[in-house]
Length: 107
Image 1 (spheres, rainbow, N blue to C red):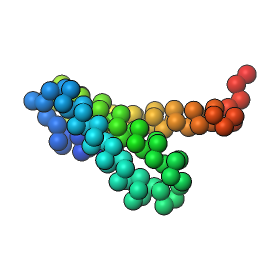
Image 2: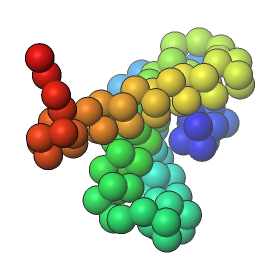
Image 3: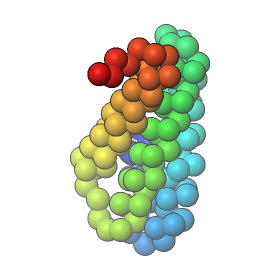
Image 4: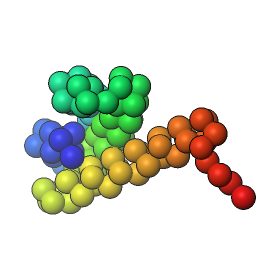
């Protein structure tokens, strides 16, 4: 959501979608790295935090950045895009991690 908010305030509809996506991806990685290092790594391990936060920040930035470049975007929509993207990416990371560790009981 932090990445989505940063992209919402930075990118406007006059931007090229490609440039907006690249800039928003970099913003997402920067915001995710700072938040992971300063907030989350204190309570969780490095690998449990860095991979999901970097991926979710990068994807949320790209999605919100491209959507903001397409036309006017409401603040609540940007927050919801960021939230849903983060939840999907973290769920996928958890599922892949469980599968790799053999905790996934597929029948």
